[in-house]
Length: 512
Image (cartoon, rainbow, N blue to C red):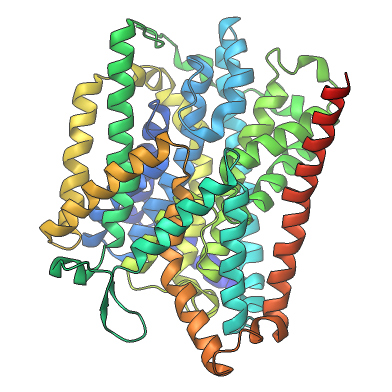
């Protein structure tokens, strides 16, 4: 009952004019960033992060939660209109939605995407409020060895989730761990990994890493892509797109076509995929889309402009928002890239994610949970009034856009610590991240390695201290054994079975 009253208090908090203003601003920022091809909601959170220094913790969390939800939805706009997903999670939406757009039925696709995003976001937020406190109570039973194995499990899941190369996921994670060791040793308070440069004693600030990895690197990538586009003389974006606000009025037939049960199923899939560390909106959308196609009564519509396919992908990737915050709030382990940046907001504001936060300070995070739900409700409303303007985002002058983002990013890196060194660190991290991404190295693995690296080291040292340096404690502690068992299960189903299947397919191809 007490937690229910705290949730109600969270809704009362965001009803205050100032806090609600931050919520609306955050939602619009996230939507606009995700709607511009190449920019993402993660980049929006990274750029807004320095502003949170001058805000109270409630307004900060409400704003970044709204950006999160807006960022998940906004990618569907250009995915449908110009076949360029504004966010990776909108790939399946582009696959079906742009076909409808070319057939002159784009408005219906946009309405359906907005409706599914709203329902998915609401269901994900409700599940977050209902289940996060329960998981926090369970987390109280996880001791130090178990926390080490849990972080190890998070690293493992994120590494094997990298479709391009498991080896590259390992390298990216190790690089994050290495960068995290620069500065003062967490146990002995001695400087390490400074390589003779006294400035490195202060270490690399979290803000510098976030801005470098997601803002600076993205700028380099977009500038490079724009230059290549100019050289080739191609332009994939239309000059003008005109819409009337009447095209975006919700229709009852859009909801009835899918039905309550399937919306609930798609959103539930997205929520629980989001709980898995590193899965993200792309995995949620793909899994939900695949299940929708498998169980559909209209499978012939898929790959030919399926409204059901759009609903499956969009409801899942927005429900993922609520799911990805569960491991972040209860264990301090982000569920995806954006929640990893939100974890930085919590840390910057002096909040330590974990069971204590969800039990003793639950009232602090309830406004953020409420903001997810209210932001989801804003999706069809903003589409109704701003739909025609969304279509014009693709025509923004990229030179002006990128220059403005560069200034905001570097100023943000400075004001976080008032250190010129951290500005330089952000630039160096950004350059390194740019080349890592070009090589297919996942940035979420790098960021998770940097954020969780110190905790992994502390829990390992504390556990080994209990047994005088013997690693047997990790194999005798029940909580540790549980997470090590999960690693074994995931390794079998996601690595061994895939390897065996690939080998059998190659054998069949060779026999033919």
